[in-house]
Image 1 (cartoon, one colour):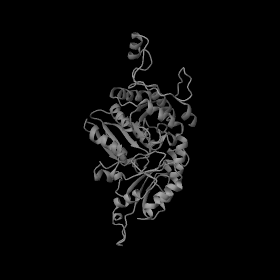
Image 2 (cartoon, helix red, strand yellow):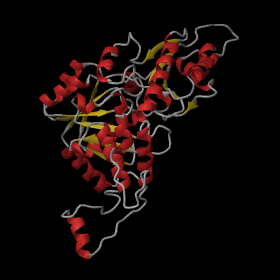
Image 3 (tube, one colour):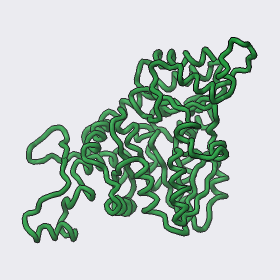
Image 4 (cartoon, helix red, strand yellow):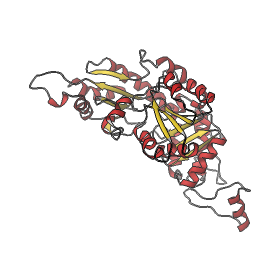
Length: 402
């Protein structure tokens, strides 16, 4: 994998460059009118317009496809752009989208507010309940969609089971692999049809630019490409170059992220002011063994975790009254950090922390948040690449003073 991450996808120009160039051009020049016509009607292979194709974007697509063991990748302007592309490519009015309850809030907003608006029926089940998935399949179900690990509880879907269910019912299985990345798991190898990425996260790894991608078969990706070309959901050449360089260190970074996360989870699970830790790297987590089967990196469980803090039940007048309810307790822990970044982004070299109920999932109704497991006392942590003792010390500031 590391060789693919460094070498795959590059096509050197006549300049003989060693590092991949950035093709910052919107259009391309032809030798004649006939040459232009041949490019436009497809009889001659080549670039037409950077909304359609761009050499820098193509290099990123080829490298990501190789890493995911897919035939082709299609890059988009953002992770949400990739999810929208998936919807427009594979769903139409009258179809049913079956998704996991445990999703990024914006994904659920897209499904509920826009796909439903255009006649797509949407329903949700618990991601780990295989029986619920099977019972929720309808004759018009066309796509099963899940995140594994999920946002923000890092819950795990049984991708192999969902693949069998999908194939038995002629349904596409789409798996968001943003938290896992091909460094930890390759959903296509487990039977998924399409893999979704917010490249903004770990594929970049330093929180610099926005982008997304879909990976799958040539046939399915051609449908996605047509949507991107027609809808203008295109990735910029500069962003593609940043992602390409990010892929070179993806495996090395994920090894370090996971090693730190494993230690942070052990700290949190033993802290008296933490009531629950949602992280499959813990041996007593219900999906621990499933994750070990699906993730090919040893001890690689990802670096995203949710943990719930205990609200103070003390009546001491000297106590901070803001710690007496779950939200205030969570905010106290977040606000007490001095190094960790309070931001909704994740997958960064810098450790980040956020309160999902009032940020990433605040647009959901209280009932929808409850179904997704997003409680007021829940904190989402994206463990970065700092010294792990510094991360633990920073989290302890607020936890120790609850």
